[in-house]
Length: 295
Length: 285
Image (cartoon, rainbow over all chains, first blue to last red; front, side, top):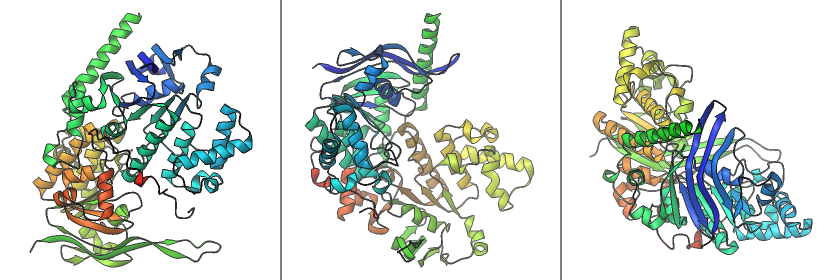
């Protein structure tokens, strides 16, 4: 399988000169064509940062210290800004976490989707609105033409998330970065959204890098998974293997600490604090080694 | 007969909705005729999705809100209509742990002060020395070092802040606690510690609890019974083992089926029956 995305030994630091913190410490992963890869980790793991690095949307005070990022064989790190921008939304799209703040509150839903289509695909205004209605129908929004006329605040959170999914797939991208797209949703809505993402992925043939903290979500939608902690990849493989036979103690501990509705309380095992402390001290040792090497 | 510490009968609550240009003022009922009983020393889990009325129900139990109709009996006393002065002695026995310790702990106060404030308010402190000792004892109870008395909330991790929130709720040695979504913002590695701490405290101190959560998996860890709330109504209630094994109500079934367990399950995404119904906001529908 050819890789759509290759990230190799990526190091990202955040902060100002002299007071920098490493957030990615040599992370590597690959996403094949049409593959759904989960990128799972807890807060501070650097999972969203990795997604943002690929999108070229790192915060202003973040720097890529080292590493390779290739999209369809093209070097994302060295790519000139205009070229990168032309990829964004067209070849690489984002499904953001927060459907509340990701749509423009003063523009109608239809205009927002149509703008995207006109910008990237050079459609006429009329064709763009036509296509927007089709896209909304694809994400199972009833009466799409009426919804095109509404403002974001007039539709529910679950529906806003559907609009953002429709927009992500609108230009048939080959890679979609889904950044915790269901974290704020109720479980019943989450299931619908995951089903929609999978349906659109199949129809449009995109690969997905699915960023999440939830091993349950990974189990349901990702064929492969990368486990991230403190900016380092601790384990990766086929989801079925990693969940059934986790090799890294951290993955094992996370699974044992995840409450399960199908098991009695006695099976819950909290993550040993010493395990987390050791992982962080390894990470900080790595930081010192790299700092020494740079001198 | 089981000893019931807290019972609600026909408990209802409605928010007044403002009149619009063409709309008369009306009431929006968010808790509808709820009958629940919590036996002394047990934990009732209250589960529901956003808008189910679960938080409003919790706020009624601790009387941050007054019921529109129906009653709340606490230890044999009807508290639904009590005024603030009459509630005051009971407030020491009924405590709440809030969802977000970041915003429920005063950022300008050291933990020692925050944790003992309830004792001070109820005149149970004997001087500065006593304050320090009591604060240290409370910290110890929730597994935090005594040195934390001098810390500010921002110096703590999320898990430590939630432990502090639990410690404050325990300061007055209450017998009844309402916990509202207290682990939903925490990472998995922290969450299990907090759940097991609460379970241990509940057993050791013989606490009676109502544990509110949107997450059925979390409910299962801590609760003896569970009540499933939908649109302000209890659609199903019973012992956790029974409900999780064989839910009767269609909504209970849907809620359980929607939980993504960390097992690969081909077909979980293929069931498209759920997709067809868009969830729209009332006013826009």
